[in-house]
Structures are given as structure tokens and as C-alpha cells.
Image 1: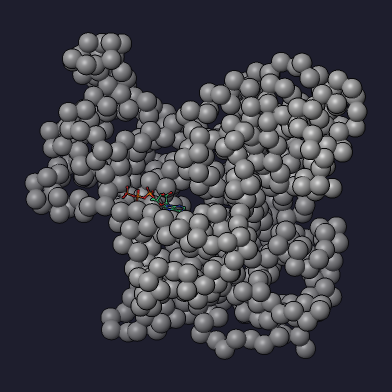
Image 2: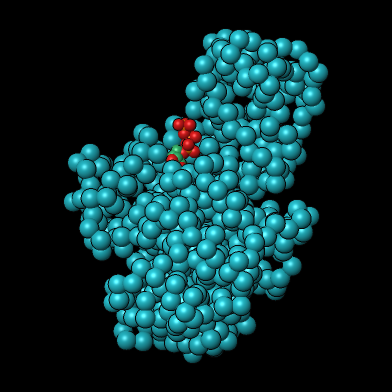
Length: 631
Ligand SMILES: Nc1ncnc2c1ncn2[C@@H]1O[C@H](COP(=O)(O)OP(=O)(O)OP(=O)(O)O)[C@@H](O)[C@H]1O
């Protein structure tokens, strides 16, 4: 029975009938809540909130879920932005419902902790009764649990949306959850967690894959994104698949795993390797496919650790940024400061947060200081702290300062170029001595942190102009990451598609048509990802649920954008040859790399510093499209 067909009994009345009179709640509440209340009967409704497990135990459980954590980190970051803006939190649990990570609104975090919705507490149904995390895991479905639908009365003020995360073999890996006050969590939040779970599954499946991976979608442009279907073939049999593949083939995991790939696909699949092919499904529907060989044919086991998982991770819209991130993690982990350089809105802070999350300091704090937004008079106190009564207006008890808060973690100095010259000397001294002395005197305090800075300005030019100290520049720019502008990113189509869905497109079941995607990809985007997000939010707001969004829906300046050449496919790895057309240069670089790597696409991609799909895309572009390989 759908919610709309339920008799009009309030949740409070349903609770009364169930808890006080012991009646079956099925006629009055949604089926999944009714089933869950029944399953929750053994839970004592008066039970008190548990205390979180000891940090060392929680660390152990995090270690066991390392693959999940590293693959979910980008989604946690992305959802956190939504959560903070809406007064909510985002939580990631493992398959047992144990909360491993929580991030979000500083207003709501303490309220969540008051009901033990925090890391180290297990939110399975058997511990907490009906709740979004536990019930999504039990029902194996994304769902909402609002207010009084929670089994325990003390959770009645919560609104929660959660989606389970599956491995490619259909086992539960964990759940993603958005929680807030009841009125703040709705179907939009449910759409977001559902889509984020799909992204995590996509990454985990590729990170774990060994043998061959078949990527497919009815719309070729979506191959390489988290919306593609994935099937892993090992020893001639299908050993893993994502949920898109199950939907497309109309099979369950049980019906697909272990099946002979050749029989199932109806083609001699090794011939599809390295080629873009068309596959005819039973019923006559054709889908575009790309068959890849992974670099780990012999074994997919034994690969643990966040760094490795990240290196093995494939995220469709990360072709350009991921290799930069991997290199930055490596140097930051050696204590080398990283400077992130890029146009405004290109994602410098997002990149820096991901860097922290993937680094050796991920368990420590990420302390961000926007040097441009603080008045010159306050920045010194903010950074270095002050002693009690150090200056008029200072907090009576003094303040440790942001540098000390970063102890054990990462200090992120955004817009570092804006630090006043006079303070640059002081900052340099702290960076060299790793001791902070607060304003107003007092003892110096030793600090230990890794440093990441960001700027849209060219520091060398500022040094030339006498506005930035050369010695400080050398100190903060141990390794410089040049983030590409959005219009240069070869993966911008996948990024636009993802952000469209995340901006409400998924929740409203919208489809971004190819002509619109191409116009968006052709635009110059002076405000980069920030500007893109605003445009996508407006597009989604103006569309009706279920619409196909075409180029006609775009604002005029975007509709008329002149197409630009794909220039960034090879990030910083290609060696351009003077005067040659771009296609010749890229083709040459690919051919060279493939030759040097015995035509092993994975190794060639690693050598070029790009993702495998980038090489395939270029190969596919250069060759006439393969017909149906059925013979
Ligand atoms: N990869 C990404 N995925 C999703 N959103 C992103 C991504 N990169 C950037 N954004 C979004 O774009 C906006 C700008 O990102 P961010 O603040 O990281 O850019 P920035 O380069 O630091 O900007 P500024 O130069 O103005 O400080 C934010 O809303 C951010 O969430």
C-alpha cells in the first residue's frame, strides 16, 4: 500500500495503537516503517542512549572499513556542503550500522550527539529500533524515517534519509545518511544520499575489480560516469556488477554472478577489449560498451589502505584532478607544504579538503582560515591566538588561535596572498620553528601540522611587486598544484552531469539532454565550478519533475556559447610538440605510451598520468565506431 493510500491516522495515533494496544501498525503507516517496528519489538522503548565506543576500537573498525571510507570521502565532502547549508549532518556507517564518520552543521552536530547519533555508536535496528541507517540496511533500500516513525521516542525530533551502499557482489558495505530536524529532511535529501551511494558503489567496484570491466550505457556520453553500468568478468565469468547493470539486464545479483560472460553477452567478449562497441540486449535494445582490462588480473585481494584505495579509485569526473591529488597526498605526507593555485571557484578548497581526507593527517582537524575575509587587525589574533586581556575587546579567557587548533591535522590558509606583509614574517617564523607564541606574550607552544595554502594569484608576480616575501613563498610552495579551470577540464562533461544530478536533478528525475550538456561544456565559465553550480540550480528549479532539459532551457549566453576544443585531456602529462594540431599531439602521446607499455591500456594511462577511460575515449575517437561485435 502506498503512503497516499494509508488511512488518515497520525503517526502519534499509530504509535499509540502499536505501543499501547499492541496492534499491527500495517494499516496506518508506510510498509517499511511497519515492518521495521515489528522487527524492533525486542528493543526496549525506554532504553537509554549508549556512549560511543572507545576511540581505539573505533579506529580499528575504521581500519576494517578503509576501502569504504576512502571511496566515500568525496561524497561525504559534497553532501556536507548541502548539510551545512540546511542545518543537517551527514553520517557514514559500516554494514553493521556503526557510524564511522559524521560531518555537517555546527548547529545540529551537538543535537545529534545528544541522541547518540555520532561516530562510535551502532545505529542498527537491533540497537536503536527503527531509524534511517538501520532500516535502510535491513530493507536494502534508500528510505526516509521522519519524527515519530523512529521506534525510540527520544529520536522523535529527527528527520533522516539514508541509502545503503552495496559491493559489486550485492553485499552490504554501509550506509550514507543525512539527518536534521524533522522538517529539514525531505525527498530531496533522499535523492542526494541515493545518488551519493551510487557514486561510492561505482568507485568501490572499480577499486576492487580484477580481470576485465565492461562499462556500458545507452547514452555513450555517460560511459565513465557513475551512471554507467559495470560488470566485472574474471575467468570468463561475471563476478561483480553494479545496480545500473542489474536494472538494465533485469537480473538480481543472484541471477548474474557466476554466469558465463560469453553466453550471457552473446559475443566473444575478449574481442571487445579496448574498443567501443554496440551490444544488442535481449529485446533488441542497443547499448554502447567499452571493455577494459584492469591492471590486477591475478588477484583483487590484499589491497588495503586509504592511499592505495584512492590510487585504484576510478571516479568518472576525476580524470584530471585525481592524479594531481594523488601526487599532492604523497608530498604532503612527507611534510612538504602544498600550494593550490587556480582561478576563483575552480575548487581549491574542495581539493584541499580532499587532500586532507586522503592524507596521513585525516584523523586530525582541517582548520581553514580565509586570509582575504579577515580584517588586517584581526588576522594576527585569529592565527596566533592571544592571552587573557591581551587587547581591548579580546575574549576574557584568551584564545589558542587557529594554528594551534590545527595541531595534529592540516592548516589550510586560503588566499594566502592576502596576508599582510607585516604578518608574513611572523608566519614564516612559525612555519620554520613550529612554535606559536600568542599575542600578549606568554609561553610559546609547539605545534605539529601539515600546511596547505591556496591562491588565485601568481605568487612570483607578487614577490616581484614586493607584496609577498620570497622566503615565505618558497616555504609555502613546496609543491604547487595548478588546478585547471572548468573550461579546460577534459572531464567537464562528467562533472556537469554529476553536479546537475546533485543540484536536485536526481531528486526531480530530470534528464540533462546531450545538446544542453554540449552547450554547457562549450561555455567559458569565468566563475568555474561555483558559477556552474548556480546555473545548474536555476535550471533544476525551473524544470518540472521528469523533464528532459534541453539546450532551449539554457540562458541565452550559454545557449550561444561557441564550442571549444578539448584541450585538457592529458593534464600535465602530455609533451606538446610545437605547431602540431592538438589531436596529433594527443594521438602521438597515446601511441607512444601504448607502445612503451605493450598496448596495456592501464599501464599506458598510468604512464600518461591519466585515467584509463581517457585513453579509451581517445582511441574511440580516432577509430570508426565498431559495429555490433556479435559474429
Ligand atoms: N569537484 C567538485 N564537486 C562539487 N562541487 C565543487 C567541486 N569543486 C568545486 N565545487 C563547488 O564550487 C564552489 C567553489 O569551490 P571552492 O570554494 O573549493 O573554490 P575555490 O577555488 O576555493 O574558490 P575561491 O577562489 O573563490 O576561494 C563550491 O560551492 C564548491 O562546493
